[in-house]
Amino acid sequence: MWRRVMAIFVARNREFYRDTAGLAWNIIMPIMLVLAFAFVFSGEPADVLKVGVVTADGDLADEVSPFLEIPHVQIVPYSEPDAGIAKVQRHQLDLLLDLRGALGYWVNPNSATGEIAERLLLGAYANPGSAPQRRTVAGEALRYADWVVPGILAMNIMFSSLWGVGWVVVRYRNTGVLRRLKATPLTPLEFLSAQVLSRLMVVLVASLVVYLGAKLALGLPMRGSYLALVLVYVAGALCMISLGLIVATRLRTEELADGVLNLISWPMVLLSGVWFSLEGASPAAQALSRLLPLTYIVDGARRVMIDGAGVVAVLPEVALLGGVALVLLLVAARLFRWE
Amino acid sequence: MVVDSLIEARELVRRYPSVTAVDGISFGVRAGQCFGLLGPNGAGKTTTLEMLEGIQRPTAGQVLYRGRPLDRSYREEVGIQFQATALQDFQTVGESLQMFASFYARTADRDELIRMCNLGEILDRDTRRLSGGQRQRLLLAIALVNDPTLVFLDEPTTGLDPQSRRNFWGLIETVRRRGKTILLTTHYMEEAQSLCDEVAIVDHGRIIAQGDPLALVRQHFPAAVVRLPASAWPAGEPLPEGVEPQDGAIEFFTDAVPPLLEWLEQIGANLNELKVQTPNLEDLFLKLTGHTLRA
Image 1: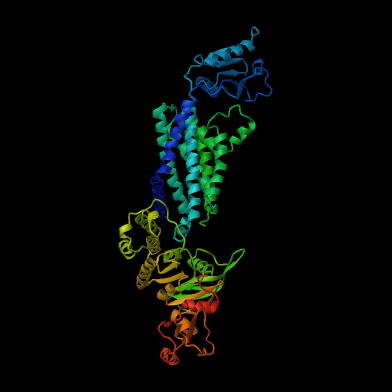
Image 2: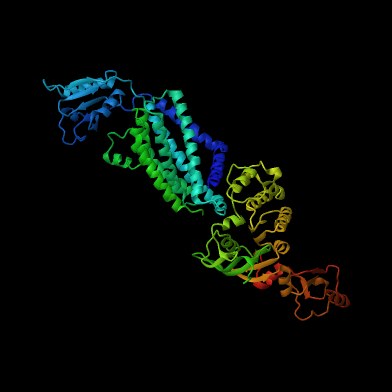
């Protein structure tokens, strides 16, 4: 069995690296994308103040505070302060207000917008005796590029995984390659395993090149464990490849496969927080984003690279993505038809 | 049915929603035989062949290999050359052979296969840059890569120029001499006549005649057909009963050519443009079905 898997694996790899156009698409395109975004969004992503509010239950509905009445301030709820404090450090939040018990707030003196937010807060609590307690945290601003690169890497893994198996296997079916393979002792599971392994390797090598390119060009932060980052991306790639295999099981034409893959991928591009944070987005959009696998890859990678998470901290994401991958793979092996 | 068949089709039926492609076909192929399914496009040859290959399931009926239904090990025993097939892109001829060889427990000797199918000079060429003949030779080599007992060839020379077709026939002869059993489909009479020792003529999903190609023709026709242009017939001489000019020619079917020629000379026919031919499968097909094979 292993010999047959290897034969398909080797053939698929050859097809990939000899197809120079495809190679360029997989590596150069994402690098260009990263660089373009680094230039275009080199400033602040938004000019509205963004303030975190800590309450006992993370719910703002029954909170009364004169500060919450101010228009054009985006409020992000928290149930405990730590995550919010980290964001204030990186200038992702202008200020963090604590409404539990004694009134207090955190602000970053290095942030210009933080100072504006602080003055608004103090104005809202102008009555003598009610002034909240000031706490400061220090830290450099997180550039948009630093924040967006983990997402772009994840998105690139998604596209490469979905098309690299979904579209390619459907093309094999349409041209008759699968029909020829069906006439040999090769089994569907052997064939699909080889496709998964080959694409996983391609995706990881391409991501490594893009990561190194972005690191050299932009000096990305890496605060967590590299092993955790690799685990998140591997589990994510396996999940996306398995999703691609589901598309590949029955479809007969590349055009239809292309349409289905677009239908799957574009909601994820827009709703998984690749380009902008979903904090403060509508509850419906947030709920929807929790159903999309790309969300978990993006979140996991950001928590490692930006928040310094280790292996244990990303285990929930890794387990979820890996579990979904396994289920989809088994379903695909059952549904698969050579013709 | 033939008792000692290597492979046997029993009452095969294949129905599609709108059409019955194969409508009760039975035959057996003995070890070492070259058996041909002959018929026009759409007659059900390829569907029949694919059921025997185990690629398609019959709607009804059974395929037996060495007297037993097909199972997984059957894939190791057979080699298949499909009519329309693609090879994976960006691989050379040698790499394609290598890949297919890796799928099988038993493999033919690589060097001998390359020599036999004349692939030596194109071993490093990308499979997308092969001519029609080269491509067919590679596909045959792939069909033989597991040293199969039984080889299926579906219209192996369709689309080849006459030169390549003759070369390919030579190649099939070589394969046969190595003791392989061959089952092929074709709509070329000449191909069936020169390669097969048994043919089944298929039309509308049924076998309408079966046997040794020469014997089949003999069974339905006298030994020879003598053709004369109508203008060569002496004026005023009445035509014999049953003979009528067709397309400007007069045809006599006969078992005894010399007396016929003698008689024609006596009545003063012009023999300069006379042709003596052996009736072939094409004539037989026309006679049996009322339509020509290539229509």
